Length: 115
Length: 113
Image (cartoon, rainbow over all chains, first blue to last red; front, side, top):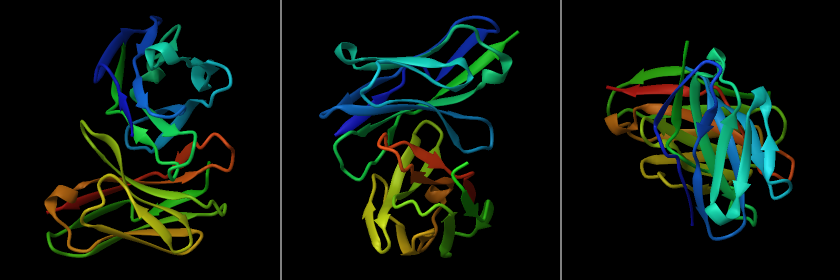
């Protein structure tokens, strides 16, 4: 079984400030982890992925995430927020060892960027 | 762009009527998925397919059926729509790399009145 917990359904930051979106996972086998972004009235776009190579992964739009096995975390960060980062962000997990490649999503974090 | 289209993009229907949503992909991906998105729940898997005529249930499959008669099309059917099935429905495919990422279509907004 696998699950994802995203702490904070809404996060607000000032433009230029650090963005930190939290994700903790549970998985009985080594996981693959993903962050997706969703802009209003659009589908989900892949931001970045962890697949057991480097623990610090870089994605699009200046985002990065660090896999910490001891903390079962995969938090998303960006050094300096931009107005265009305002969107909903989803963390997701799947098993690296089969099971239909099913993704389990967190409930999402809405990021608001203020001037 | 993973070449995924969904139709219709918007639909309003009445309780008790059958509804079919279509997902079409152009790149011969083996795995296809149907999710629903609801506030406070994120995305939840309804059904998925791992090949032509090969499908399996997801987390929230009650009230839904699927069919895949050819690689490019994956249909989701609500046999008798209920108000609880008002949602946004997303289709996804799994990429061809080893990292198992999924790519999503633009979604279908379904309202059941």
